[in-house]
Image 1 (tube, rainbow, N blue to C red):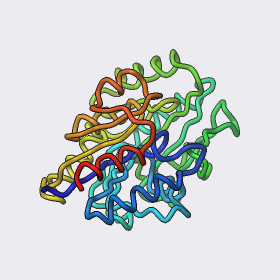
Image 2: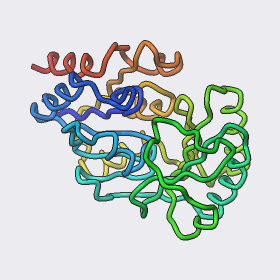
Image 3: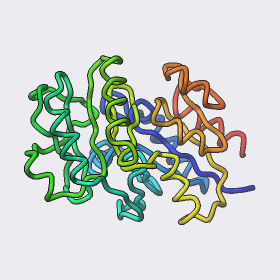
Length: 262
């Protein structure tokens, strides 16, 4: 029987109101103790992922971060990464910081924390990105950016309008993925699926039976990559349609797969 690998989204899959349920933590530990790999696949940066997992006792075997922009080992040592051209970052940030109701963040490979740029939202921000340092636009050339997360609160029309502008004006320079109230701007051809495929092909040797669990649109490429996939009853219909099963909790899915293989 082939060993198994499960890729886990964080926000809306494992993390709710800033916490991970003990039932999910216990199930992931049991998954790993059974000889399987657990891979965290998230739009978060290294810094934000560390914060999300702090105090949980969870240590994933690998991390696919920045929506596929980077892959790290269990200790967050970078195995593969892509970055955005600074000129592109500058143009997007300059425009988006004047857009009403948009919080503009940056994720870098060279900073210990995520950053937030001054914008029309002022101090308003998302709990998903709770830990950040302020950064001025003039500091952009001094850093390597892997992503530009845009938080757009409860406005589907604005999200689609901004996403269309990004994809049209920066075609071939970036990818743009939606995750509930966020747009994640990442290097071109970067998805959770491409990051997982790189890990599978280049580092693991393509020997694992693959599973995925995630709740939102930016998980679609991950679900397409996996042989088996799960979403939730609260997931968008497009995501539910793309997965094999719909579950109530991550722990339930893990326990089901473990029970099938015992």
